[in-house]
Amino acid sequence: MLTIGIDAGSVATKGVLYDGKKILKKLVVPTGYSPMKASEQVYNSLLDGIDRSDIKKVIGTGYGRGVMDFVDKRLTEITCHTRGIYSLNRNIRTIIDIGGQDSKVINLDEDGNVANFIMNDKCAAGTGRFLEVTSKLLGSEIEKIDEMAGGVEPVNISNMCTVFAESEIISLLAQNVSKESIAAGILKSIANKSVSMLSRTDIVEEVAFTGGLAKSKVLVEFMESILGKKLYVAEDTQIIGALGAAVIAQ
View 1 (cartoon, rainbow, N blue to C red):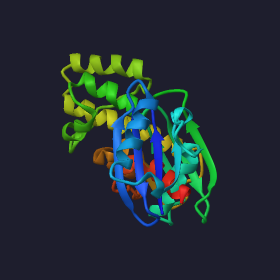
View 2 (view 1 turned 180 degrees about the horizontal axis):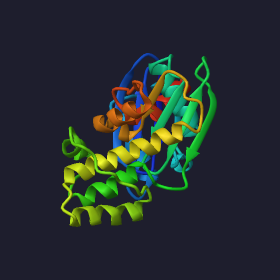
View 3 (view 1 turned 60 degrees about the vertical axis):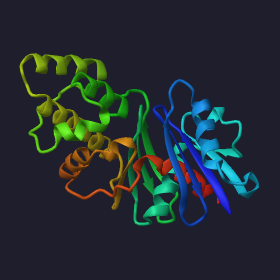
View 4 (view 1 turned 45 degrees about the vertical axis):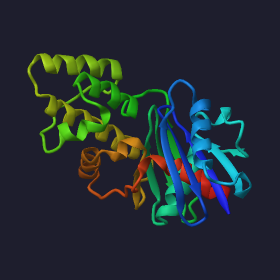
């Protein structure tokens, strides 16, 4: 029995083909200007070489789920992230997820259901968009920020508003502060913002970190240092919502 989960986020659209036990295919593409086209691209790619009649159900999630006219059901990313991470690690009771333009903290009960959650979708502070904009000021791609920031003492970045942070970084560069220290400072500021958000709810063991920013080992290290505990980071942190959708579809 095969199912598909597609998570259309603001920055990336993710898809998973699942057989009830393991992921058979996974795909991540840029969402770009059209979540509809990105979702269709992912859907068609997952179906490549598969008989459509073998697919039991397709579930869509993420902010772009409303435009997926090919899915059987649409669910919130809160529900799908919860089920996705629980399918990988049943000990998880708290999730911090940092997406392209929002952040969320979710508490799970022992059965993997959503017990509580808080969400920051009013401001891009501390999100993937924030890191993308600030990284470009340093002449770096977001994927290479760890290369700059690893093992470097971070400079203090006091502003988390993207606009004000840009001005602060430009000022630091004018003062000949190294790009490496600024890169580390950006990640440290995101870590502080994320832990602050975590502290607004119950931090119940174990804690998982999901979303594209969880790929940054330096960011994970900063967060663990501030929290004083290890974080569970899945092998592919971006597809957790899509995986959850596919698991629920089973």
